[in-house]
Image (tube, rainbow, N blue to C red; front, side, top):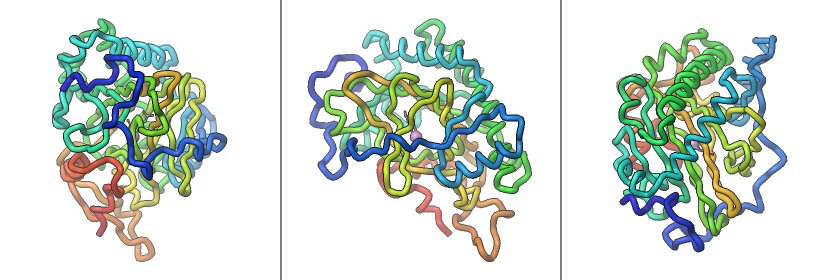
Length: 336
Ligand code: OGA
Ligand code: NI
């Protein structure tokens, strides 16, 4: 129901349905704030070094920030601004787009999967399919009036960046440069525009609880002013401090499978705070439904047998949405 949206009202008290049991709370005082994830400058003239740095980051953290990625900073700012304006629209306007049917390709929703989950998350989000653009843009929000133009420009740019990263990631695995792009076929592209309102009790709840991304590659545009993304590393949560004009890249489950578990789709979460609301815009590149995914033949050997069986992305995606977010890694269900 649209009245479950949390961006439509002020909140003095965290409703009970958002309160995590004591053992599942974020324990914010234990978060590591001075470690951060690797940073890669994509404009470096040493291409081999960039590939090596990306490979190392995919192995060690599954996450990295990229600088000089080619997406204009004015566009990034415009995206965040128009996304903020969207969530400020009147409740009636937003209610028109609301749905909790996870099969719907364009929808405004809240939390993660309100039909399945027992405790809610302090997030509203707009989910948009983005490729091919001309197929979907006419169903995107018509308000704010500049929304479609800004977001579609951003989607095209993100797609290009994603393909550049695929080439570097392929190379870093010792595969042909076009391996990932070819194997994953005509990529789908989705976007989650996440809005995390100010929260009256940030230590009792999550914006998004620990999860891995089910797609291939995620490109995250973060609010420059407010941190909230945290990445699990050796049992500890590391806060990601947004660098100016950077984007955050992470390996999704499909690249973990394709790399035969050499690269990790790492647990991450979004926490909230009581001072400021926070925006993030996650772009997901993912295979088409009928694409068969499995470890690359070149990465399978006697010493390194296939960790996962082959499966279609449709099978994977259905499994992902049929579960709750903070369970075991979905890929565990696809082991050989
Ligand atoms: C996601 C995600 C993190 C954030 O949308 O999958 O992990 O900081 N978002 O919003
Ligand atoms: Ni995620």
